Image (tube, rainbow, N blue to C red; front, side):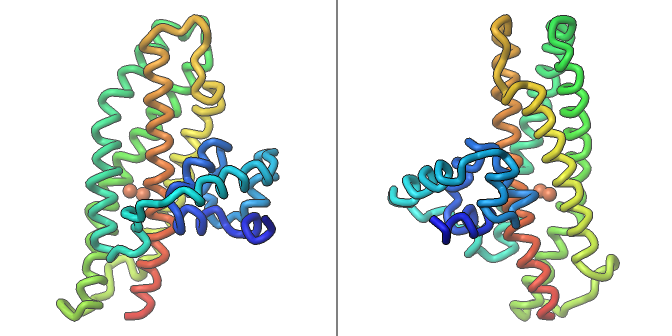
Length: 239
Ligand SMILES: [Fe+2]
Ligand SMILES: [Fe+2]
């Protein structure tokens, strides 16, 4: 058990992406704070590390189909995957979830004042992520692709106008923390996305949508913070 609890949560999700489901269960942050050792992440959440290790070991003994190994992909393919999967998911979800959040606030806000903060945070996350993804797609990811092509000898390497990739990356990471914090606030205010007994169908559906949104965001941030960004920094450094 000692060799597991001293590993970082990021390492475990990168080695076996299925571990993310266990960390979600215990609300352990593997994306923005992925560099934390499991033992420290558990103590921060007041969770028994033995229980988490037991769940992880149970999962790891099941055969992994091994098809999803983004840590082995080329960075241009990974950037495309993030856009086609996670950015697309965010763009598809926001027009559905935002009106639901507004609707339950207007119908149930009087009896459930926490809905006001939930709506406020979700609107802020939506606006921030929309601009964030746009900048990744227009600036950061195209630059990562030019690094790959320079490494492959298909184009000369040129210094970007922002100097080093570390600059946009640190900005993106700060925005990831902000989005992660917004969803964490929503999780807490919604009692872990558990609708109250008087919730109507829309209320219940909205909480499920918010929970799905958070789960997708964690995967999305994990791929960027823990795989794409560090590898892109290393690639730029090697030029
Ligand atoms: Fe992204
Ligand atoms: Fe991002």
